[in-house]
Amino acid sequence: MDKLKNKYLTCKDCRREFVHTIVDQRKFKQNGWQDPIRCRYCRRQKKILNMALKDNLSIGNEIKFSEICDTCGRQFYTKFQRKEGENLNCDDCWAEVKYGKKRRVGQGQGNFKN
Image 1 (cartoon, helix red, strand yellow):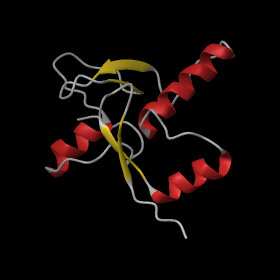
Image 2 (image 1 turned 90 degrees about the horizontal axis):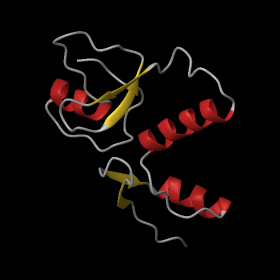
Image 3 (image 1 turned 90 degrees about the vertical axis):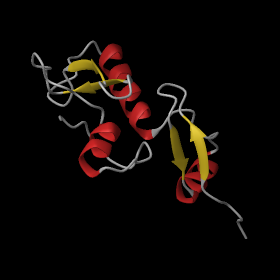
């Protein structure tokens, strides 16, 4: 019987804590993979950029701009272009501002505009 517990790891890129769930641990173990070094958000961003660079493609409608989060300073990619005087936040900081509570990286998808 597995005695796995959720693991709290620190992302190599954004330095935020994220949860490596029991379900994910089983999937990683089944595929022979080591524990992730990046949160879901940073893994997704890295995959999109690598695919675009490899195939010399435009990243498309989903992501067009590289921005720095005004709250945490983390680089993120968004389809929104910053307007003068406008604040932009990564998805985690946006949720914290909107809902008044801190979320762990990887619990939401997409980038949001403040």
